[in-house]
Length: 375
Image (cartoon, rainbow, N blue to C red; front, side, top):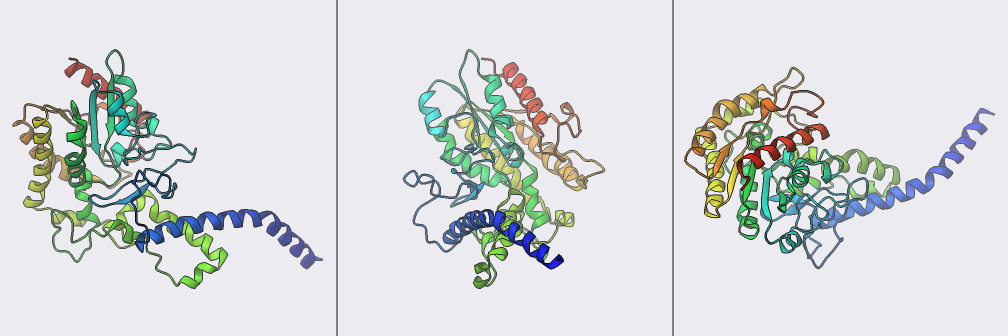
């Protein structure tokens, strides 16, 4: 009787689960095939191609990029099937799907660019509307039209932000640039391979190609087994495409970050960081664009071992940048760390904002901008 009962239960489960398994297999197969084809260069177009709309998979947050290694997938949709990115690969700050359309439809608007990494990108929010650049866009729009553009990408350093600025600042011609980025410049030091005695200023001795992170490095015949395919996709492949797995660009899978790597920070490395910041300041100065430099918040708490990063930023990086800013009439230093309480209400972790944190940060920025750049 027990055996018969088990068989009946098994048949019932199979009957009800079979449609789900088939659907999951199709989704998994499509997702893995898309990236497999991209890795093997079977595509003759870019995810950003205007002639190939909605071809690249919608579940990938990131897509390979020729100059910055990775950028935002213009076809990505969130859990609510909402488009999160523009066709150019920017995080949206309004309903417009293209920043080109925003520029075309608002020729006399006051234009603000926000550059940064994940703390500007705000991927943790389930909608772009909850990101602080989008909230800032809403707060500043009144009698005068204001257009805020989010240049932030998770994992990006000032090197990649500089590349984006070189490409897009001449086109957008911003009135103000909000500079909120610092910590990611230290990421290669702590995530890079231990065998490297020092890290090049362009990270080329520790950086791997974005698409190389998604190689299916298991025997192909295993993927013909349905259950294996689903398990692989859910517990391995999905994690690799998640934003938190961008660290695989610098380190072998499974190896934890090692703050001892910060000992590889040299004067030349710091000078390169400051130089990149100054280059962006100079670009803005040439375009008559103001810059609001905000030291990226990194709270030190008992829950997170972040004192090493914080110490380096506040003793070695920020002082030099602040000193450099004195040479630029168009740049203002604006420290906000003490204006946002270090609590779970405002921070997901040591530095990424919650929804309430984004609201408060956008309010602080809005008040500052209205006060200083009211004209």
